[in-house]
Length: 408
Image 1: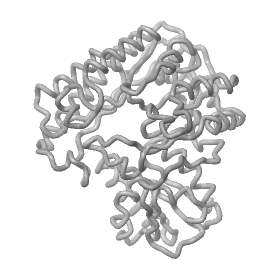
Image 2 (image 1 turned 90 degrees about the vertical axis):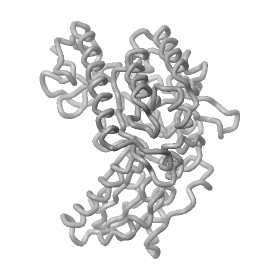
Image 3 (image 1 turned 45 degrees about the horizontal axis):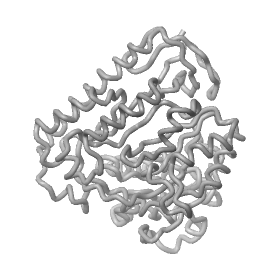
Image 4 (image 1 turned 90 degrees about the horizontal axis):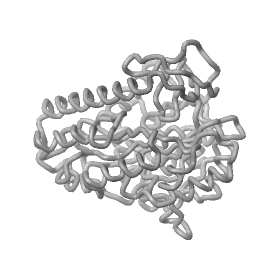
């Protein structure tokens, strides 16, 4: 290929990398690095990989874009390996790729008012398709740099989302994932202010050949009545929710400027479990947020059990310059790492308990590459033999290896 795209970070970047391949198709011998800025480590990895690409692809043009390029354009422009830096809005504009008169082309992302429509009908290397229905965020959590990389919340119109879903299904995708920065805020900027639950129902109703629909990370405090109804009554909406929790202590949540409380999250999980008894919950949790005491951290550990979480994404707190949390009293890095390790161990134990409970049950598995499949609850299954990706199999779970179920 004349244009190679190296993608870091979230599912939004994955979908946008597909749009970049089309927008930059006319270029030759170019490597595009689509960066993530969620943690300082993500930025470090991007820089490390840019240096590696510069060594291995001597002579190739390197263009850096994505959230880290949006928030730190001069950092990347100063790297001798980098030829151009493009912002998050500019990377989706074909004109940006044809005009290379400026080394840095990064606009004010906060002025973006409409969700860009991506003419994408396939996701390279993925069995499931990611349908970006929302971008940006109107909230300002004290630890988060992402609104400054993505801008304010904006939504894909319902009819266009349905049309995009149809295109993916026509290309053979059996499963779609609705994704965005804050998908439960979906629709507030659209005429009539449709909610995420209505969008879910429209897609399931208007795309009857879609076998599975999933949601990416959600903010439980924004869940609407239609979403609860769909969880309880739409079997094609998968029983797996990944929650943006971040902490289990109310004072820490307040200092993070989160909008939910511990009690709300527990109540939400209980309500969804009553509607959908087979539901599985994952969650993002930060370890070592500024001012977090041992007692406050213990409440995050306890929340794993109280909510019945089975899949944890643990983030050791990483101060991002320009955010309020970076100016708060910081914990020692050894304490942060130790708490993150304990939280991961708690998550590993919860996952093993979930895997134990699945043994002996028959599950419908959608196969992926590498001899892996996923159940309805998004639990990974190691297959006994390689199967064409995108195939449904009804399998009995015979055991597990601590990370994957094993199937007969």
